[in-house]
Image (cartoon, rainbow, N blue to C red; front, side, top):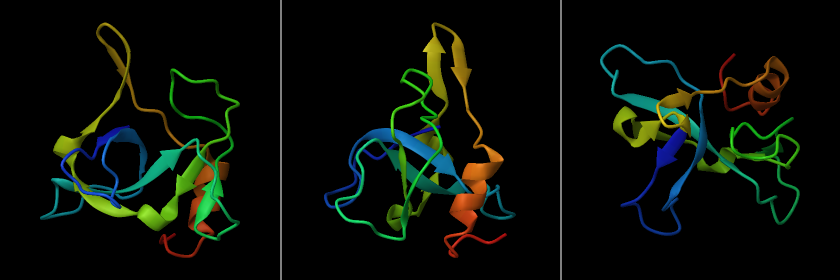
Length: 113
């Protein structure tokens, strides 16, 4: 998925970027989901809340490019800010995490099992 963060202000995210949706739609909150932004920029220092993913999930990029889940930027956003990746004129895709990457995120301790 791609999250649109335009309208936010620095140091918040302020542009479109790939995200991982980590929550299901919840009763009485069906318009909100919890996301983790993804980046190809590695952390400046080794920190426990930024983890390297096994591959680049963006369909237009090289799958071997280092990609990082920026778990210090977990947030709730409205579904209206999300869209699938556009890969063709009328084709959109929403990749799913591998079970290994999901386990890495869960292993950070902030995400419920």
